[in-house]
Image (tube, rainbow, N blue to C red; front, side, top):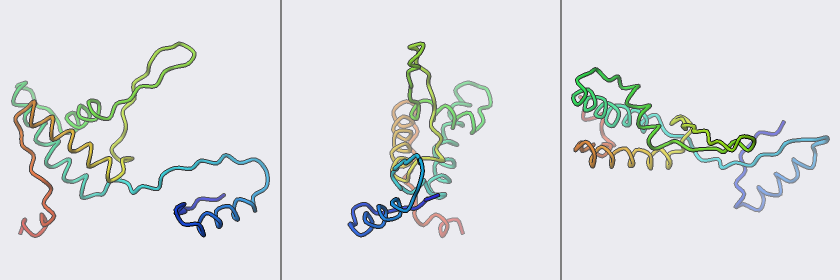
Length: 139
């Protein structure tokens, strides 16, 4: 099995990929995907502590019912990370929600900006920018 990351903008890397594939025998399924880095732990901590927590508190205040952060997280994901797939047999659309764990750092940043924009416009909540020195400021 071949599981590697190749920089396909590098001609030597392309040649190496083709060389390794040339050694294979039999039938194989080949899938080429972008090797973008998944969201960072720091992005995830900021998202949950600033965006999700603020939204859960707002939602609790508005509804008079306790809203857990997991509920707020699921609502935000459903709003901004949903996509539909058509069932070719029935013609019906099925809706799925992406997981934030699979988002690239860029996609996570874009998702967070959508959430922040929604909270600002719909809830009048201003979520501060991530503070790169947050660990030093806690002391």
